[in-house]
Image (cartoon, helix red, strand yellow):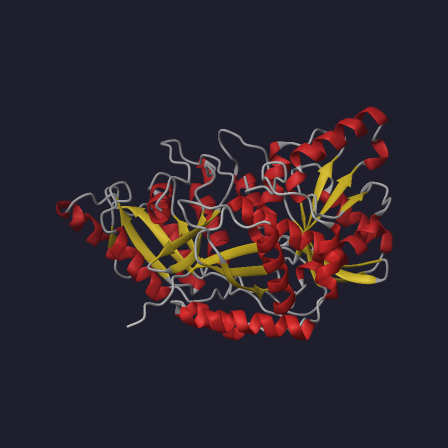
Length: 507
């Protein structure tokens, strides 16, 4: 789960009400002048090229839209038991993807962030379900097709000790037609004596096979070096659209009322501006008018609870959720108030937080709530959803359409927060006040100082602090809470990152 913002766990006092007044009263020109002085002081420190690029690109224009570039996406495809999960774990350098001899073990997540030689990219793991044995060729090819749609490049993993099967050849035909870069990985080549087995795979017509042993790590570094020559710097598929109606993903576990919500919005208002028919693997998009405003709703198949073996539909549901979040700007997570808030509900909310999208919580079936359940529900919200206490809450009935119109101000508030830029002068004034009143604790005889802070991006609001040492997670949460208390940010996650830089040595 995400690192939840837990005020009780961090020993920092509640906000002094005067702080907000002092920040509001600061003369902006004077604050900017002070910030520029702090910025000039950074020249005495060893800054990296990306620091300078970021500092040059930052401005205080609240209308300016800055996106953090979308990471390139690399999909790992192949039939069951060829070692996809072992390869993913090897690339990540940690045991994330589930590895079992049973093909198709369920995963909670299908995307991971990976790094190699100072470059980051997103890995899509397509090993999450057991294809129907009766139609294994079509099932694995369809699975690969989903991944290819979402990827900039594809790792196609084949078991070199088994050789190319009819299933592999079935997938190859689809990959050739995709026009996406495909890297052929010959796995389970544990030593040089087995390399001739990999060479046989030239016959697939996908170019040079890269012999690796995911289990032992052999050849994986060379493979990744090659991957970086194929992957673009910025994703061509995960890039955000700009303009048009704001895009809303409807998320939630099965049967909480996601489709009912969409259908009611369409049916009740009877204004379907445009209908983009979804294929079997895409979310269905609908342009809908609610309370006089047009929105683009992305419906998803939901995420099923954990099972020993996931079926194809469940795997697609997870991929659809990731795809919907990629397309969306704000997510409505639908919760069924007639049932206890589950770990699965929290996991879906955490997926939204990881994606950096704005968030609105829709508590569905509110008309069925009795007093007893309402008391328990408030306790569950306090315990399980404390880390998203900043998200607007709307109590609705998707079945009857009750309070559907209240979604509009909640969505607008969340998106406004998502788009918010704090002037550099005000942000540095706040950080200076916080550091003066509540200095960072001394660690190993040293006290890290914050040299300068700036908002590097919006959508979501992302702040960068240049520091002389590592800031404790609790202190970063403290800064995040104060940002929320003073500037709002209802409905938007906030990222507070740091860059520890050392003073330049004088010759």
